Amino acid sequence: MSADVLSLLWVLVGILLLVFMIVKLKFHNIVALLISGLFIAFMEGMKITKVVPTIQKGLGGILGTLALIVIFGAIIGKLMTDSGASQQIADTIVSKMGVKLLPFALLIIGTIFGMAMFYEVAFLITAPLVINIAKEAKIPYMRLIIPTIAGATMGHSIFPPQPGPMALVSAFHADIAQVYIWGFVVIIPTIICSGVLIRKFIPGLDNMPLGNVMKPVDRKPKEELPSFAISILVPLLPAILMIISSIVKLFINPGSTVYKITEFIGSAEISMLITVLVAMVVFGYKQHKSGTEITQQLTNAIEGVSNVLLVIAAGGVMKEVIIDTGVGNTIVGMLGHLPVSPLILAWIITVVIRILTGQGAVAAITAAGIVAPMIAAFNVNPVLMVLACACGSNTMTLMYDGGFLLFQQSFGISMKDTFKTWGSLEFVNSFVGLLMVLGLSLVI
Image (tube, rainbow, N blue to C red):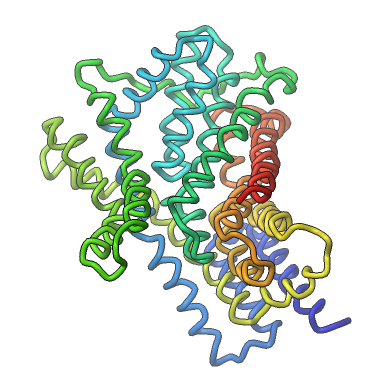
């Protein structure tokens, strides 16, 4: 067996070991990721003196890039929920678009929430709202849940400053404004297929039972809600600031003070901080909450995502091991002779890691270490590579995936029905998203 094949084999064994520890032995994800990373490092021949620095670099790199972004996203989601801003967005969009266009309205709502906050937070906010809407419109709830979740999962997977796409943008040095622009080109037909058209092909959709876990949300009186304009502006503000920053920088001198200020404001961390401050004012102080109450909301939000943040950071260890051992370059060398687009290869790699690990952000971060050398080797547009991996990280998953279980347990449906609904919409999201990326590769 050649050294290259053996090198690739150890990575595969390490990922299978990760799955075994999580699924069979019920290890915590953090412990399992660290052990798998150590296994790959030693099997690939990494010197023992380099192992600890690699772990520190992997953890520090991810925490340095994503910690504030994840925390700020959780805070924004909490403030939006408690203030009624989420309800205001849902009510206004649904009322403007009407019952006939409800699925498309919910695609928009799901995408906005998926872009603005961590997926689990977006799910737990939107699902009760949608159940309320379904009851009022006398529509089987799953017909409206599918478009909402299709939008939320795709919005979360493709757009910065969410953890997965942000890590890809950082690893591939892609332009954030272009990721947004071409990301919308990818996402619109994709979520229409996965959220609206797919419902025609799912048998028994109207008769799926609704368990008693997911309760309809308690609605606030209309007069207590923030305005629609401010409710929709806040979750979109980071994207607006980053896009404006990227556009303005095209027309000013890179050495100027204005350029530096624009770059500062347009960074993911600062744009999110600005959004948090705006949210604290409009969803907190303006709703007559005290500083103590707002601080408690922030504390609760941070506590809720602390475990998720550490799991993502542990995923950075495996990514760093793959980079430092040179496995990524080895894979590029092996795959370079295949008559397949590097975008397809990147998508396949990310899909496999997502299915095996059950973590979208971890799949994106780990794949980044493997895929990054392909950009220079095959002269690939970094933005398209970001989108290909992002679509790969949002794919059909198995029953140990957190998103799968959240969907199944929240609605109290069977595993079979979960595969028919969640599994189908995720597969279509991933596959149609890839087709759109390949289409874009012909023109940009």
